[in-house]
Amino acid sequence: MEGLLGTGSWLYIIFIGFIVGLLARFLKPGNDGMGFILTILLGIAGAVLASFIGQKMGWYAPGQAAGFIGALIGAIVILLVVSLVRGKKRTVLPRR
Image 1 (cartoon, rainbow, N blue to C red):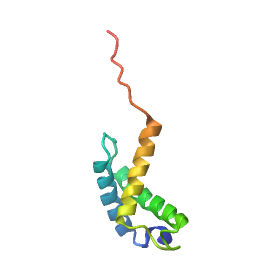
Image 2: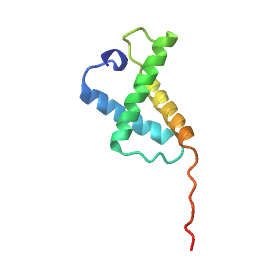
Image 3: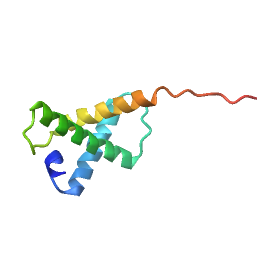
Image 4: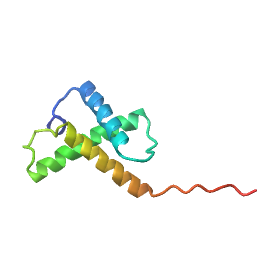
């Protein structure tokens, strides 16, 4: 994981993942309905996605991690994909 995230410190990865996840949820409109753990995983997944795509596109050298902005964009992309897959929630009123 060190090649994709830039560090081997799990505490640092969790902290940055939480910050990126919070910012992504704040910047993307709508209610995402996530807890603390899913927010951290969202930020980490955004960093992994941004690093992977950036390395394949030639923006980052192999072993170089995406920056904070790249991780944030990756997390927002993940949120958008998840919201498209979930679709609109329909509320059905119970019959009387």
